[in-house]
Structure formats: C-alpha cells, structure tokens
Length: 319
Image 1 (spheres, one colour):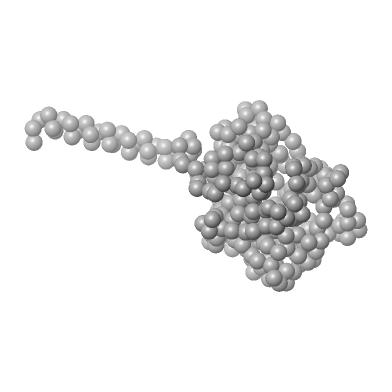
Image 2: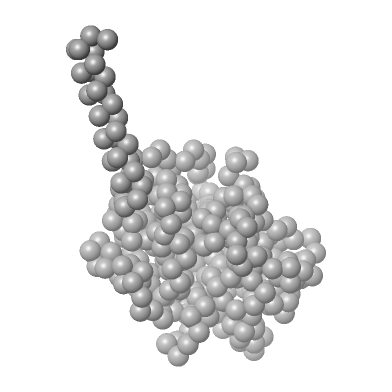
C-alpha cells in the first residue's frame, strides 16, 4: 500500500477512534445534551377544539401531558429522570410544540419529577406547580435549583386551586393543608372537567386518603367545588389509577363512588413492585364491570382524546 494511502487510513482510524471515544464519554457522563438533537415523535395533529391527555410510558414512574385546545400543555409529573424517560418526555413535547408549557409535581417522589430539571433548562416554562410537602434530598434540591435558574412562576398546589380554560377546568381536590405527614398522601388529586367529560388523576394517594375524600364527599357533595367549577365524583369517565395500581390504593369503596368507564394504569414493564396488583385489578372490575383497563406496561403511551362531549382512548401506535 502506498505511504500516502497508509497515512490517510491512519488518520481515518484515529478520527473514528476519537468519535467513538466522545460517544463513549457522552454515554457515561452526559447523555442529556444530545436529547434535543433527536427527532420529535410522530403524532397526529390535535383537532380544533380537542383536548388530549397523553399518559406516557416512562417505566416505573408517572408523566401525563394535558394538551389543551389553545395549545397550552400542562405536564403532570415527569418520570424518574432516567435517560429513557427524559428522552421520551422531551421528544414528545417537541412533537406537541406547546404554545405555553407548565409543569406540575403531584408530590416529591423522584419518579414523579425526575425529568423536570432538564425540561426547565431546555424548554421555556411558564409556571412550575410544586408539592405542598417538600423533601430534603439531592434530586429535589436539583429541581428547586432548576426552577430558580429558569426564573419561571411558581405556585404550591392545595385544595381549591384551579385552572380555568375554555370549555373546561382543572381543580385540585387534595391535599388540603400543611398538616399532611405521609408523602404519598400529599399527592395532588386533580379533577378535570372538559365538555362534561370528567377525568380524575390521583397521583400516589393511598386507600386511607381515598376513604378520607369519600367521607368528606358523602358529608357534603359540593365540598370540592371551587368557585363556579363544580366537582362531581359520582361518575368519572376516566381514572388514572392511584399509585400505579398498588394494593394499598384503589379501595373498592372509593372506586364504587367513581365507577370509571376507563382505568389508566401507569407502571413499568416487569417492574419490581409487580404493579398493578391483582387486588387493585379485582377492585376495578368489581366497581365497574363494563370498565376498560389500559396499562402503559402493556400498551405503551396511551392517549385520551376529548371532543364534542365524548372521549376515546387509544395507544399511540394505533393512531
């Protein structure tokens, strides 16, 4: 082989080795900066007047993107912060291209806000809704630092806080005060009414919190109303099941009040907790025999579309 070709080959090998080294270092130390270079997910365009809820498959964690008809997106929780979940959420948001983006942390478990520091750095965030009961750990400190650096508005969610939109509204039912002492039971419970379709997002609340809410509602059915925003729990169309379908939530008493038509269970495939538990699934069926159960561990991302006073549920791959 001529000397000139040998030199060229050597340079090519060295250049290739350098690229491989950079990729290896990126993999080991800093994958996140490359996320925004990845393409957006392929999603159908939202129709005029349509509201969509995207229950993302982020493993053993939670992330629900509420896409309002005006283009605003509210991210309710943000996965566990793993590269795969950050990648999923960021690319999904790129696809939605929100006119305005807000983040909401239902409670201070890292599997519910892990991607938010990254989103605060890479997206323009209008408001970050923080939990009533914070925790002292490195992950939550990182979130607070990211919120401060982003200089976005902040709010602490408590009962009766609401977000009003054309044709609908979102009301926070729980927690009600700083006297709460169980971390999961400080989860924000959110009631969404859009065009008469009622959706309940329950965070990680336990059966004890469910029963406390039930007792209050039995005593006074309008107790959760916020201004002109009525909260009617007697018949819920869509329920995001509490605590990933654990056996310490989804009590039969609570579900029998709600009688959901559709259950959404967010959990990781082959997760170590074995969620959803058999007892929770039995309670789903007992409370609502005709109800349908959708699971992110089996069907991936799940989209609920609400329009013209009706709704439909599909896995993203079916669109």
